[in-house]
Image (tube, rainbow, N blue to C red; front, top):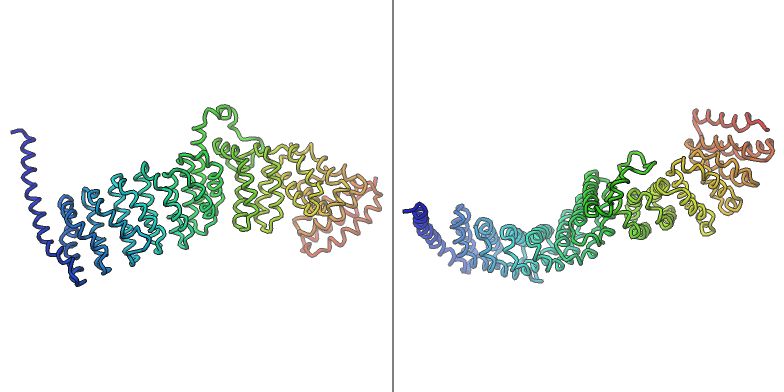
Length: 593
């Protein structure tokens, strides 16, 4: 006899014994099954406990459990609506253990899924015990894990259940439902997209839940739903994700970063949403938590590298010749990759208006994060920010009037980057016109603040030829008369930058001395000791600047400077020494020519 025949004979001889064993077990369970229909709740409970003890607790083989499960499933499903909570609990536990242990769990789906949909997928919550609703949802998650693609015919029932459990009052049920949603989307991607839209609304109803763990779970589930959906609901989710960027919980902000990064890498229609998704991921680069910053940077680098590879033909010239950073690149700053820079630069025309809107938001947190994002965008755009300079300056002017100091500080840092990357002849053409414009009369210091920041970022070698133009504009009598803040503000800034020599020629003109110097000196002392050096330098060049008689100069100096030097911000031995030096410079060591 062939060896295979002997093996088949032995296997066949074992099957009757196995079947006989199953029949013996079922015969022993028959009495307990009959007791499940008794009116006494204690009897029903004892019967369920005996069934559990004789089946899953005995660690029987999968083959034996499979046959037992087929016989016990219908009676156990009836117990899910038992009036006694303990009976329902044991029934859910038994079904879950069978689903976990049997080799063919999908055979139970024709009975299990309709029953679960009826019990947990209706508008009315039929299960009053929240812990049992949690156990049932965990059983549903387990079913998705072990059945996988076999669940495709029951996708509608799954969606109906999840629509209810995602908005369940019990937070743990919400979290488990989110986990089940993620597993379902990953298990049935080719079918899930047909029903994905149905889950967006319940997810967005839960995304602002008071528990941070629930919010994080909802964000993860929303990421899977959109990723495996039709792509039509991205806009419905984006505004909610943007709000979660300001969440107090780092776990929630991290979830947003992961989801947005995943979309930018894997969303089928991601090219249509780059301009909407990019700001969300880039906001993570300025998060207060180092882990989130590193995560966002890593994901952004992957996004840029993937985009660069996908568009290699369009970037061929830049890949060959434009790899080195531009001259005067900010020190200590790592330059983003080419793909990252191109992504931002090509979408900047859409991003700038959105930045402007968010900088006017009524929430301080939104304005702060947006002002931080602006610097990140300009660092990516580099010289291509030039073509968007006018709207950028307009939003910077508005931001400089913000009541929140951090917003102003961040926007001035962004303005400094404009000075680094935009040619001075371009930004001066717009900025100096804005300084002179009558529309700036109510708040002229906004244009001056931006001008000072831009000049601070511009390389000295490039700025030097334009200093006479800057000084000439600021020294014009109509500018000084119209905007009295001009000399007060800009004197301190320009002398701090070492630009005093540029003002020598323009300041010789007419009333520039009187208009520029008198308000400038008090401002140089108002800020305390850090402004004393500019004050001394400012006074030291006045005899060279003015065309008036030296004696008249000194008289004016005495009148202007003595009250200034008595200001209470100048105090202490070292400051007194500096004050003596200043008095020597101002009144004792000038020589008239």
